[in-house]
Length: 156
Image 1 (cartoon, rainbow, N blue to C red):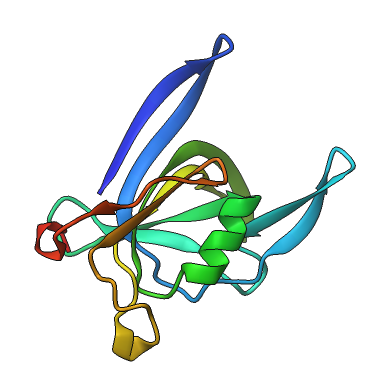
Image 2: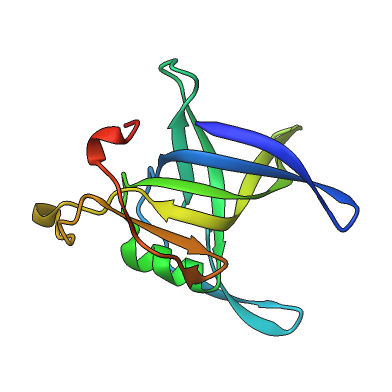
C-alpha cells in the first residue's frame, strides 16, 4: 500500500510517501559516502544489488516496487535487523531520477526514508528473536518505544 502526498518545507513543495510492504531482496552492504566533505553511511541500491520495498497495488495481483535509501544510524539498524521478505512500513521524501535505456529516458523514484517501522521480526526457527508481536520504530536514527501488536491484525 502506498500513499503519496505533498508537504511544504521552507517554502518548497516536497513530494512524500508512506508505504507498507515487504523487502523483496537481501539487504545490501552499508556504504560510506562523502556528502559535502563529511563521511555519511548509506544503505541503498548499488550496481547489482537492488534495495527496494514491494507492495500489492489495490487488491490487484500486480506488485509495485520503489527503491529505498536509508542514511546514518537507520542504515545500520536496517542492515542488522532487515531480511528478505520482512514486512515494513516506511515514510519519507521522494527523489525523482531517470536513466537512459537504448534511446529512451526511463524515469524512476527513490524514497529517502525518514521513518520506518519493522512490523514483524523473523521467526525463531529462521534465526530471529521469536518475538513476533514486537514493532520497532526508528525516526531520524533514534530508536522509538516498542509497542505490542497482535500479528493477526497485520494486513499481510
